[in-house]
Amino acid sequence: TQLLEQSPQFLSIQEGENLTVYCNSSSVFSSLQWYRQEPGEGPVLLVTVVTGGEVKKLKRLTFQFGDARKDSSLHITAAQPGDTGLYLCAGARTDSWGKFQFGAGTQVVVTP
Amino acid sequence: GAVVSQHPSRVICKSGTSVKIECRSLDFQATTMFWYRQFPKKSLMLMATSNEGSKATYEQGVEKDKFLINHASLTLSTLTVTSAHPEDSSFYICSASLSTIQETQYFGPGTRLLVL
Image (cartoon, chains in turn purple, blue):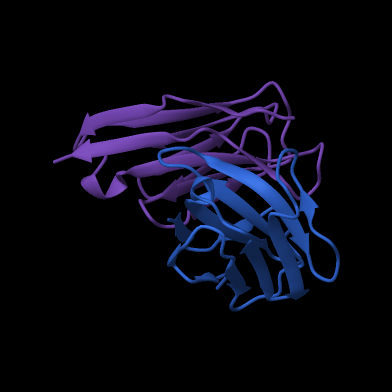
C-alpha cells in the first residue's frame, strides 16, 4: 500500500498568518489532489497536480508537487476564517489504477 | 460541472434493518464510483470500487455481504448496508471519476447513518 503522511494533524492560527500543510510519501504517485472538507459535507476538490515540480496557485493558496512526485505542500497566505476546515491530500495510486490513497488530514482553524 | 449527489443526506434506522444510499453523477458519466467511510475527525477510508456493469471490488477487511454495492448505470451507484448495527454508524461518502479524466474524482456530500 502506498502511504501518505500528512502533517501537521492540527493547526490553529490567527487571521492574517500564513500556514503550510505537508503531504509526504516514500512512493511515487501519478498525481495528487488536495481537498477541503467542512463538517457534515463531502470533500471539495481544490487542485490536482500531475507534473513533478509543478506549482499551482489558487488565489491565496499555493500547491506544489515534489520533483519526484512523492510529496506535496499546500501553503495559505494571509489565512482567513473561511479557510477553516479539514484539508486532505490524496494520491492516485500506481499500484492500483484508479484508486486514491488519502492522507490522515490536517484540521486547520483560523480565528479572527 | 462534475456534480455528485447522495441520497439521503442523513438516515436513522433501527438495528437489524437495511439502509440503501444512492450516489448519482448529475452532469457526467462515471465509469467508476468509489465508496468511502469516514469516522469523526478522521480521514476517508476506501471501502470499495464500483464499476458500471460489473461486480464491485472491496478493500481488505470490508464485508461484501454486509455492504452491497450495485452500479446499474453510468450515473448511479448504490450502497446497501444490510442488517445494520450500531457499529455501522458513520459518515458514508461516494465519489465519481470522470470517464475521460480518470485521475480526478468528485465527491458527493455524504450520508450520515445512525443505527440505534
